[in-house]
Amino acid sequence: MTSIEAAERLAELANTLSSIETVLDIPAMRASIADLEEQASAPDLWDDQAKAQAVTSKLSFQLGDLRRVEGLRRRLDDVPILLELAEAEGDEASTAEAMKELDALKIAIDELEVRTLLSGEYDAREALVTIRSEAGGVDAADWAEMLLRMYTRYCERHGWPVDVYETSYAEEAGIKSATFAVKAPYAYGTLSVEQGTHRLVRISPFDNQGRRQTSFAGVEVIPVVEQAETADIPDDDLRVDVYRSSGPGGQGVNTTDSAVRLTHIPTGIVVSCQNERSQIQNKATAMVVLQAKLLEKQRQEDRAKMDALKGDNSGSWGNQMRSYVLHPYQMVKDLRTETETGNTSGVLDGEIDEFVESGIRWRKQQQTA
Image (cartoon, rainbow, N blue to C red):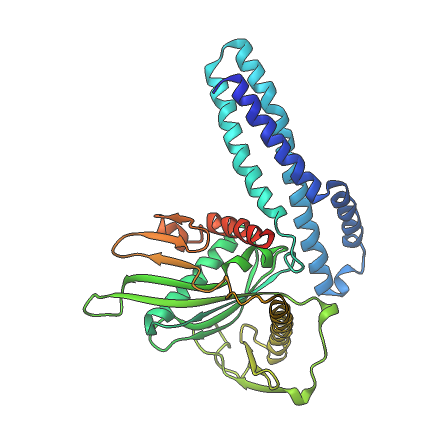
């Protein structure tokens, strides 16, 4: 690469980073961090644990964003100096190192640019994710459990805490459904592009004739409701059932009727929680999930009304969104973005960043269009 081409790449990256800094509003971010640090230092902060966790989580996330931007800016400012020194000394190894840094910077800045696309009303929220087995029998139940592992591994890679609220195990293998919370800012905006039907094609491990099987699992992603949005649900609208937790568990998990199932009678929405030992704790957690589902139902109804007014009869973009083929060849392909890879084992181990990022960019293009 010539010095002119390197300068052009530097200018392009500098412009992109400047745009990111503008969108993120760095001065406002610094002011917000100062305010959060003041709140975090209050002696009575942990009197309200939910508020304390929200403050410390938001502070940690914003500090991470600020350090990330500042670090990229420093690295970008250092590259011209490295190139100038390498050129003056005729050091090809140093020039190659500077070019390698340019490549790394492009990847890092592109990743950060995706973060700026999360500007929806609820994108900054934590996420509630539900995975359900669909068509395909025992293979579908096994596939749902594979997806649960894929997403929890993805969250682990990003350092996002995951709290599994409820798991309904299938009789032979796998799960009927599972609901978990991803407790990180922008988890909803990031993971909402994963919503839809995921299709798996493989040789069934449950077929003694070794035949190929196609199975399906659905992923639902909704934002966590903030306290100000919660509404009182009349007792007459709610049916509460308690039962014994099922599936793998430690001491005491399966020995008491601590699991709670809530049914919202007017809408028919059913939620369960069995991850806590206490019935009271399980009921409180189930109420959080129910409130989120009721908010999402209201959002969908409002959106349907607007679509009807606009004459929009298109189907949901989330349905049948990705195929995972393990036989007769290895490939994962997103049906919306055309993103694909042959590294199926990596994807199933949580390496889905490429799919998530392309999904976010695709969604932004659809919204703009």
